[in-house]
Amino acid sequence: MFLPLFPLSLIVYPGEDLNLHIFEPRYRQLINECLDEEKTFGIPAYVDNKMPGYGTEVHITALHKRYDDGRLDVKTKGIRVFRLVDFQNPVADKLYAGGHVQPVEINPDEELRASGGGQYLTQLLDRLVKLYDLLQIEADYSLTPPDQFSYRIAHKVGLSIEQEYELLTLSTEGERQRFLIRHLDKVIPVVFDMERTKERIRMNGHFKNLDPLNF
Image (cartoon, rainbow, N blue to C red):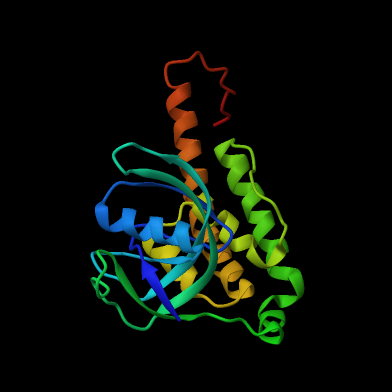
């Protein structure tokens, strides 16, 4: 399939809401066409000054504001992941880029095998609770739908953009959950040490009730 393309230096996941302020002429043309023709467009990830090949198809859910000078504020939502087949910049007779993409389809049986029978979700939730308790922040996520849980928390666990992109390339929820578990297993001890260091700093200079030592 062919999509108009709007490369961005961020990762968009299926189901994610993304607000965009559109000001460049090429993207004003792209968004206006998508609004008029009710069609989707693609956001290929732009990482380390290149497009490594994966992105997300999105659709416009609302035109929030149209400015007198042609700028627009639109609300969009991610639909599905794709692999970029070719890139045309610009598309013939257009200002914007485009390209053929291959949607990443998931086989239900493969997804079931990769899910670990729900054990990965349990492990992931356990680690999320630990992380948010350490950071003293309130958990903000939903388990529904379960097949996109990893997407909903990917921006909330301290991944770099390179790691967020790697997650985008994983084709099953089970693989993505295992990826996040491995990440949190590395992050949680670091956060624990940081919080302990902060507590030591806060205590410095305070009167201390010390237990006597027996020599």
